[in-house]
Structure formats: structure tokens, C-alpha cells
Length: 136
Ligand code: HEM
Picture 1: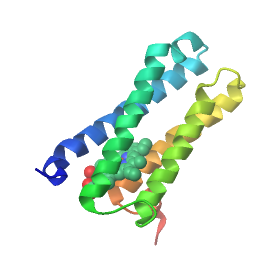
Picture 2: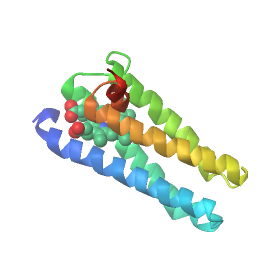
Picture 3: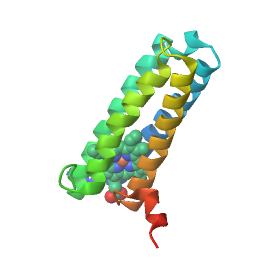
């Protein structure tokens, strides 16, 4: 039985982990900005988030093998992977208590914007994502 058979299940896994990743980050970042740092850095939340993001990436990579499109070969997937790294880096900044409130708030907003943009790239399968709407 080939991987292709499981395309719908892997896509659901990918989309579910995408939704969990965004929601978890939004909630943790919100707690952090509200001054509830104990909750943000809680070990169980942190480890669950690492686990979820690893499944997200593994499912995303499996989908690339099924549809025979790959980062560095197909622009929309290159943009997705690159922006995933940006999203993770901004997320780390936003959740780090050592940073000032202002720095964390800016990183939080930029991370959520990056996340939303990646979804638009995924749905359109175009590296410009939602920016396509600006095209005359
Ligand atoms: C935060 C990061 C990511 C987000 C928010 C995200 C979001 C999504 C969403 C919403 C879809 C469903 C699109 C649709 O069915 O219309 C999707 C599909 C997909 N994603 Fe991701 N993704 C992320 C990371 C990745 C990564 C890192 C890869 C691979 C390197 C990847 C590869 C794929 C592939 C191959 C599909 C299937 C496209 C198809 O239906 O043919 N994704 N992604």
C-alpha cells in the first residue's frame, strides 16, 4: 500500500496540527502579554507544542512526496518552508519572558500575520498567497 492511499488522512493531520499550532501559540502568547508567564512556559504546554509542530512538519513533508512537489523546486513550498522558520523564530521571541512587553507584542503580531500568510500560500498554492488579491 503506497503513501498516496493516505493522502486525505495525512492532509487532515497536517491541517489539524496547523490549527492546533496557531491556536496554542495565540493562547500562550496572549497569556505572556497578560503577564501570566508561568502558564506560557509550562513544561507540558512547551513539550506538546514541540511534538505538535514536529507532526505538522512531518505531515507536510509527506504530502510533498505524495503530490511530487518539493521545497526549492516549487516556489509555493519554498515560501511555506522559509516562512515556517520565520514563524518559529518570531514565536520564540514572542514567548521569551526576558524580552520587553513591546518587543514581545510586536513579535506576537508578526508571528500571527506570518502564520495567516502561510495559510493563504497553502490554499492558493502560490508563493504570493493573499497578495495575489493586490494584482490588478
Ligand atoms: C505553519 C506552517 C504551515 C501552515 C500554516 C500550513 C497550512 C496548510 C493548509 C491550510 C493546507 C491545506 C490547503 C488546502 O487544502 O487548500 C496545507 C496543505 C499542504 N501543506 Fe502545509 N502548512 C504549513 C507548513 C507546511 C510545510 C513546512 C510543508 C512542507 C514542506 C507543507 C506542505 C503542504 C502540502 C504539500 C500540502 C498539500 C497541498 C495539496 O492539497 O495538494 N506545509 N498546508
